[in-house]
Image (cartoon, rainbow, N blue to C red; front, top):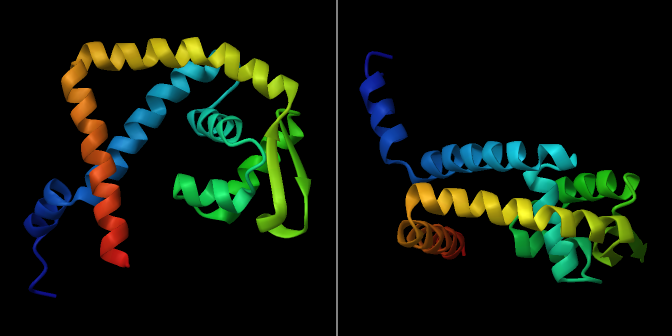
Length: 152
C-alpha cells in the first residue's frame, strides 16, 4: 500500500471527464429540481414527460435507448408517473411492448412546466452566456458520442 498517493486521486478528480460530468449533472439537476418544485415535479420527471410527449406511442425500451438510461430504472420512473395519472402505459408484455403516452393531466403539467423551464434555461444562459451554454451542450453531446463509440 505504500504506492497509494492521494495527490494522484486529486488529479483523477480534476481531469476525469466522467467525474466532472457526474458533478455537473448533479448540480444542474439540483437547479432544475428547485425550479420545478412548486409544480411537484423533478427534473428527471420533466425530462421523462418531455420524452414521452415527443415520441407518443414509443415503447419503454425505445425511450430508454434514446435517453441513454437503463430500461429498469426508467420503468420504475414511468410507474411513478402512471400512478400519478400523468402517463398511460398500454400494450404488450414486458418493457419492449409497453407503449407510453401522456395523459391529459401529464399534458397540462408539461404546459405549466415549459415556462418554468424556459426561465430556468434563460437564467443559466444569462449567467454563463449564450455562446458558452451552446458550446457546453455541443461538448456534452460530443463526449457522449465518443464514449458510446469507444465502447462499440
